[in-house]
Length: 459
Image (tube, rainbow, N blue to C red):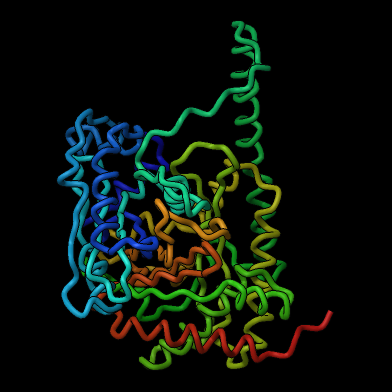
């Protein structure tokens, strides 16, 4: 088991479950009822018995010792345990749906079984069927999870081959060019060793460049720099509260074009305005700017599913009252972070991510959160997906909302997926520590409206 996977098992406690999840909503195809769609999903899922290895994995026994070092695979999967079907209480509105996800997301996954669950949800107002899934972060990261969902869907509304995300996919064809001789194998392995050695040798210069950026670039948030302490940064319990909503991606793109920024920067600006309003409501808005850590995918096209991420820090400019000033500051901070990372080799990028997120490694140590300064206040992720409308056996995907991980000292997590023309925001927080979390959704809309009202940026 690579350390990039085992660290999520080591960090897990009863109050800090380390699984990621997602909520998808589907509209039945013409002539199909919600009950018929739920029946079809169940039938296809139970029939999907050719299961990919990652969905058979569980920590080796005993889970608290060998399970941090090695995986084992179960041959028989108990679908009655992993696949769950439920009906929401009336009226089945957003409150009931989000409450269901909130309650289930706080429960640990069983390490004696492959660590995933899928919940088929009926009784949703508006005639839709929901799918809530959760998978341990040691098995997948957010990019891989979205990939798995995408492969189970189709851009063709007439396609009826829809199945489950855990179905084994055909192996990618290897190139025929590399030699199969011993010499070819040896030179390939030697090249990999030389490349890795070169990356290790480059860690020092890369670290020096990052340190120099932290000293000379006022917009760059270097590892080990401190962030203010807020209600977002306290010890948490296991209970969760989940809030979700989507916005047309075109609204975000129009702002990005007008302000000469990226869609990712628009998302940061929306979160900045919303967090500023939320903290101000609770008399907890600090004089210094909040800092967000942003996971950055290291996945490349055609690589294996799993975990491949690093992290950068961005100043959210929540200390600035003017939306225009916040936009300018966020653009500058984001640009500086990307500039510092640009050109790093994968191993060097991983080292930067480790240096950026170092407090997470000690967050569960008693007293650490209360008495140790922190480098960031929350995580904000953006996981881009396909832009075309997506279908499962003709049922249209109508909403896709990520459900991520609050952690000790990081009571809120905001994750966004841009799929099928919508930006779906999923906000997960510690229930007792963050009251009225759902108000963040109102503040996000207000923040977007403020951005839309700004004068276009000048070249």
